Amino acid sequence: MTNPQPHNFMALNNQNITSLSQGQQSQEAQPDLSNQQSQGNQQTHGNPQKQGNQRQGNEHNYFDYSGDQERTHGDHLAAAGDYRDAIKTLREKNKNLTHRDWKVPENRATVVLPSRVKIITFNVNGVPEEAKDYNAKELDTFLSNPPQDPSKPPRRLFLLEGLSPEYVAVFGSHFPIDPTFFMQHQRTALWEGRHRAGNTPMLASLKDPETSFMIEYSELLYFIDTPQIRSLRNPNDNRHINLSRKPKISTDLDQVGIMHRKASFWSQKIKGSAEGTEGWDVLIVVDPPLPTRLEGGREKTVILVGTSKHADEVPLATELYQGGYIDFIPYTSLAEAKTAEAPKRKCMLDDLCFYWKTCHTQIKNFRENPLFASIFLQKIIASNYMTLVGYLEANLSELETAIILSEIKERKKHQALDVTEKWSILQSWSHRFPEYCGMIDDLLEWHSIPKLPPNIKDAWENCEKDFKDIQRRLSNLRSRTQLLSESFVGLATMAGIQESLDEAKGVKVLTFLGFFFLPLSLISALFTLPDEYGLGKGRFWLYAAIAFPTAAVITCVATTLVFGWRANFGKQYYRR
Image (cartoon, rainbow, N blue to C red; front, top):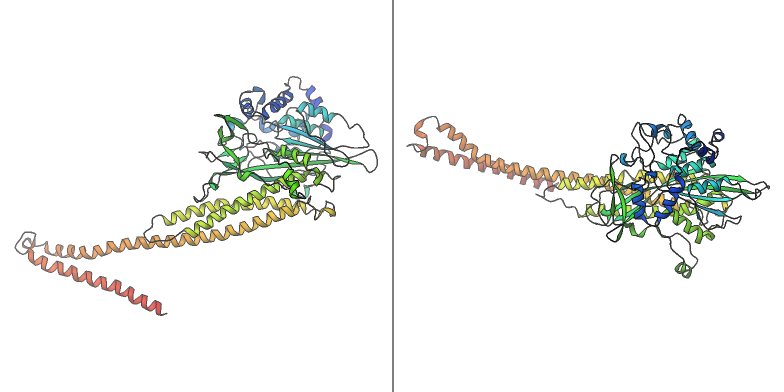
């Protein structure tokens, strides 16, 4: 988890960011895309096939990124308006804002990805109202209206799925949000080695997790239809889906993809006119789900297949690995658990709304703190991490079984090559463990900051113990990986030695053949000088009488020396 911004980042720049409506008045020539896009999102979210078709064919879902404009104006983050102008101004202070994500395929660089917004309002007792959907224009109108009672500041949770530039412009124009918050969530590359990139972390002294943080996690997807190309992405956010190589023992593990996910949190506290009254606004940005499409009467998941140069949408039959994450609600009885509803696990936004609607009574502490709004988010992410841990344990167990079943035999071909292939598979997992452990370490570093009430230390709301258990499990898996790597190195050495011995035995056979033919060649050369000893001549019998016995004697002497020495050496060795 990283912390994209300090608490009061835009104190000096907020005067330059006025309401979005003023910015839209200066952009009269700009078409109103927000309402069209939101209506399209609302209509196609329930029908994924239309969503995919609209994304390809609707000309209003595209911006002009020609030339170097997309690298300088910030239009890859926000729509036209004051917030984009602020991003352009801040480019000189933070170069990360300059370039869009270079991992986005070039043929999809202008595609505006779908977004949704739901707003949940809490009363003074922390009870949430029904979540409501807003398009960009309605959201701007909602934020432009001040609270009806200034003495009772609101407590509002904004859930944003995806980063459509229209929604980013609205939130950025009404809240003092550092554009780095949106930029870091938008990035899809796990590491960036390009000059025209930008994902450099900020200084630790600028971190304020009470105000803003980002959590990275993984979601596992089981491919019923095995993809032919291993470079896969989510079409709705361009995040990578990793298909690692596995030992050919279990076919199920070989068809699991690890989807990279992010969730970002931003908050601000609001003081009321009455003394002691305080509210808050929280913005949680989550990733959109994979789109779906009807193919042959069957719903299939649309996967982006290709490279950073070109990628196409391909429908594949998929489902969540082992059914998705496990429910984390502490039910008081079995009867309550049997009657309680279960989350759909289709997308993070709907699952958050589900838990806030049905399980908000589970949260009994620190409702006056904005971090109150992140508890269900953290629980879902922790449960997804447990699914990942179980999958990693299964893969390491498969590799350990591969070592146990490996036998080094004489005259067995490609032994070292087989062991090297399994070692290479292990290395493909080894380099990911520091990444997973680093994500959990960042989470625990944030939890170590003493800002939560002490009465929740041992309560269910405290997610720190969940992530500590995940950290312990990942550390154990990392240690197992190091031991497995050493075992594979030893096994590969043994296989290489055996192959060398097999090759030496082959050379020994040729050597014995040489013992037989060398005397023949030598004697033949001696008798080729005079003509009377040649083949068919009168004295050829003399050549045969001398050459063949000589070859037999030399072969016997050599055999006695080689095998007699080895037997004598073996007896002396075992006597020791």
